[in-house]
Amino acid sequence: MKLVTLTINGLEHSRAITPNMTLLEYLRDELNLTGTKNGCDSGECGCCSVMIDGKPMLSCIMLAIEAEGCKITTIEGIADGNILHPLQEAMVEEGAVQCGYCTPAMVINGVHLLDNNDSPTENEVKECISATLCRCTGYNSIERAVHSAARKMKEASHG
Image (tube, rainbow, N blue to C red; front, side):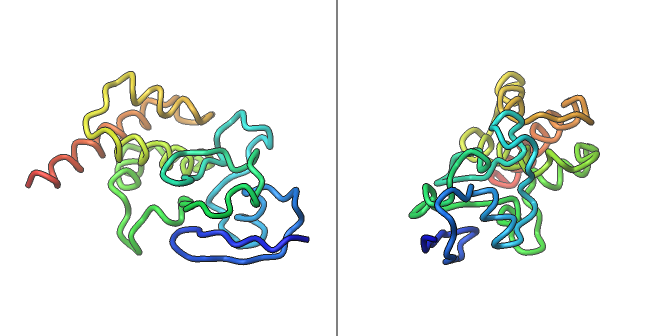
């Protein structure tokens, strides 16, 4: 066992874990942060995406001990209390949350895109969401949600 301290959603968590525990297992099993999903255990589907130091990363193929010293944000840390992020609101409005399994990862990737690009092109949005496999929506509603959130965020910053 090894003592690991991780900063997740602004809070510090220390646990004694086995050295081979993935970040995904740490989040779900140790902290009950179940928004991050386990889709494939091999880094293929993207459903386990979390933000590490501001960049989307796959938590199923990263050991928890590798994340020590990093700032980790899960889907549970995207909203501001009860106030949803504009992308989360747009996902609901556009019907982009059908089964909800890929939604947390789509939001993580989309928030990263919007944090770095306030006017993403159609191709940039497609590339962003292509990192996560969705079996329900056909991606169109997710693309619309990202564009809608970008417009709303831009309007809010200018008005």
